[in-house]
Image (cartoon, rainbow, N blue to C red):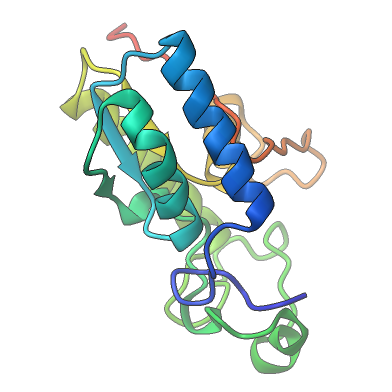
Length: 175
């Protein structure tokens, strides 16, 4: 229900989301358990808002925005009400048609995973000895897990649904 929440359709965080981000800020500030060298967020308003709330706890005033950390690019469906999606764009089964785009100018299931994999490779190569915090979306985190553990096009694979404002840690080693 509601609008498809890409960069245009997203209205930012809910009150609950702001509370969760504030609690994460407070935890990061009080525990100092993370030393972050670089912080980057997707270009979707709810991630930008989350990053702006937690960034001061990590010593950042400005956070880079990177479209490769966005959820599936919704293309022309961005901002369209979900109830209108089937009429305007047809049915969509990402496992049956992994190369079909969500809507014109949007991602397919496969291109979304390629984008996420590319971002992870880029962070590992461009910042090999740094800790990068990527403020993104559950879909991006789940995609990173599917990429590295298999199951991108397996409808029967284990379903991974990270919680909002959670921390997922990936470690990269050269070998």
